[in-house]
Image (cartoon, rainbow, N blue to C red; front, side, top):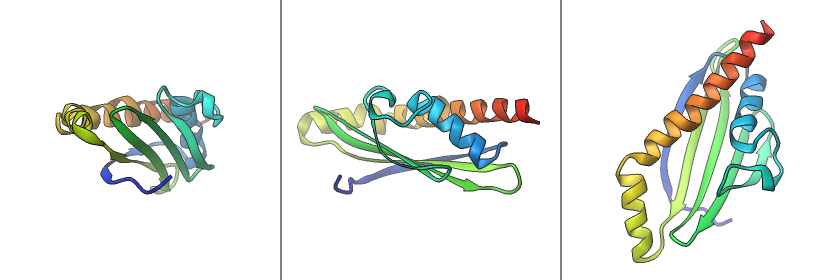
Length: 131
């Protein structure tokens, strides 16, 4: 896929190892696997480098988008998860859609709470069960 315009990046620190956080990332975004048909609604898995990077992509009539998760160590037993969004919004309908989703702040809320928050909570619960 051609590189899309950069939209934003959000990050959170997770109290779990990269391996545990990776498993949580897959549970939240890919329903436990990386097969294209098992990604979140509206997304397919573009690429996956275990415990490092997961790239999801998708498209619909108003936008073409990519959501990239990057995992980095943040000290012993801690991981930073970054969610990077890249997207294009072609045409008049795309501009309206961008205003509704990106400019309104809905994308920021969805990324931070629904994705990063769920990934962190899932990883931290799993990490507690290991200790």
